[in-house]
Length: 512
Ligand code: XMP
Image (cartoon, rainbow, N blue to C red):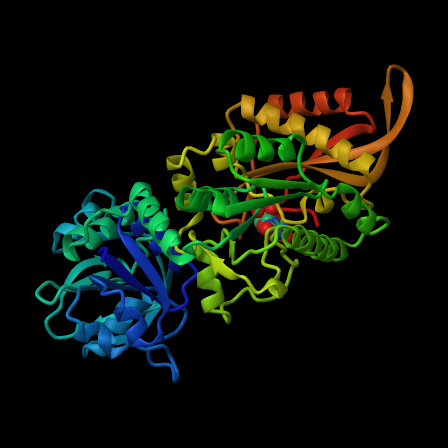
């Protein structure tokens, strides 16, 4: 059994980051809602626990508590923010409301330099976000660090390996945080850094073989990295017992349908059924301009086409899906904030429920960056591994207004220029999403002494960590000028280019 840490989630916005940082140290960890039954958590035989932050106050009626099995296990514990307050509260210390809430950057002074906290000495800046604080230490504990507003910014009982930090080591604004979590995992908990792509691939292949036996597996390829890595892993495991289906919706970017066939059929030798359903999708979208309606139509149509193709294949026992860990975590905790529907997200490649196939989800414990690392280790080409996210409804939500073949082609041409220029400037990996949007607005222009009255292209280029919030990329004006010039000169039907300078929130990344 591999060395594993368990993170108990108390509802902080940054809990997933704790897991990502620990995984970056090549230590495996899993995240559970704090009230998960003990047997499920302890089945992993965790070598230590991290208690996340959270919005509650330990004295509030009904506030989340520290389950008894955590301390009974005798394993090391690191409480972060609310997690530290819980530890203090549970062990006989006292937590109280701080006279001044502390949000944002703070400096800490290390009082008792334990090895795992030593990185704080060199980089004392930390990120705080709390209203409560530990006022009185539990018996056996000592103060390890303090800040202006937190006399106990870190505390510990080294004999019992119990620690708490009031600040958030998981966020980038705590520069020493990554190293603190790494040392906690490896030095305090004794986990070996064995969580590598190669180790994952070996285990995943063995477990897919065991699960599938001599069954037949179907996988929907979308062109995105998740389904590509899933299909490649399953193919490595069971070879031609896998069939991939790729539905060309006619709503992809320029060259993408060809690239899927080239990579998976020609280069990797996978059995691949490629269906061109462009006309069906365009017919279903004809005259539709409402964004949600477009999303619904594309989602439904996709399932219908996929089911039809799957039926032609005869016997199929399993469906392989590229579900990632964040989806698993979110469905385990459905009442987390953010439940209000802004857009209906459809994942092309999503499960047609009626097909009642058993699922194979080899990536269900991976974060996106880990899936990419696995893709690289599997030898997938960089343009697949580093492909930026693309919405399930495809260009239907980037052609604002009516979706016609002519407008799609216009958008594809402009989008290809944008990507080519960003790539040339080395910006395709440093901006997380970049695309063109075709607006249903015509404006007057003048070209070669003649009046033009044509459509507008908006460029959307954003930087983001998690796609929940995003900022517009501050691109070099000369680069923007070159892109704009090329689009107006090379794309028929477009005479004006604008750059979207709205962050998310208040805007969303996509326009529809
Ligand atoms: P928004 O526009 O909501 O997008 O800021 C956030 C991220 O999600 C992508 N997106 C989708 N992905 N199916 C998907 O799989 C969808 O229906 C969908 N809609 C938006 C968007 O491209 C961005 O990365």
